[in-house]
Image (cartoon, rainbow, N blue to C red; front, side, top):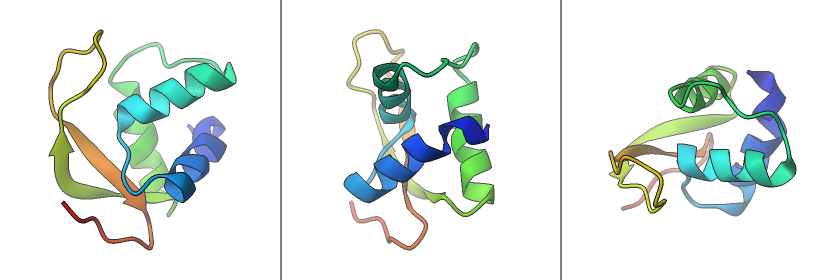
Length: 85
């Protein structure tokens, strides 16, 4: 799961909050291998959080992607940031 660490670092530096959709879009844009299972994107972020790369917030946001199931996704931030609604 560490193969996406550079993308996660990019997201934490440039966005106040991000979710799995943002991670997936950045991985696709960079031409990296995609996760086989859609649930793996959340696992990637939980793994990164365990290694101190980011942290989960209590904020959830519905996806803006047309192809999504529109289930609210947890928002993530840099490990040293506090999330604001």
